[in-house]
Image 1 (tube, rainbow, N blue to C red):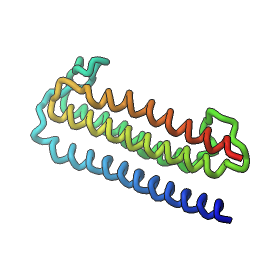
Image 2 (image 1 turned 90 degrees about the vertical axis):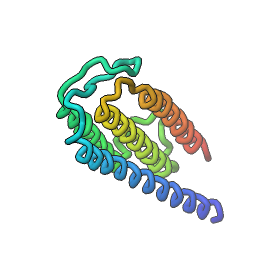
Image 3 (image 1 turned 180 degrees about the horizontal axis):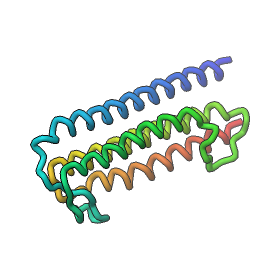
Length: 166
């Protein structure tokens, strides 16, 4: 009974954290839209439209191109939110035991919420850099590289630990 109560409390805490992360992602996406609408009129007419692997701008275009990364941000944000409602369709790196299925599904949803927040932050950084005609964009690339790998490793190990329990 005590173990079940602890599991329920842990699950509730995970749900609260997931909700907070989802709200943060909504805020980042809304803030990106508000910022672009606000900054659009005084933006330079020519802005970076692509950054190479080094983080340096290598293609430039009209300022209206800033709406392309915002459109991608919105598509990813909405799409990942929808997909996150169906954890049974995710591709898991382990064979899930029935007894742990719900907890692993919740953990996978938690991971996808964090990934969505990271994607939103990266796109918001790209939008901000483009809006200010920044010619380098190194820190969002590093954030993406390190953040995605760290999340995938941490959450995969967590799911494996859950699944290995008796």
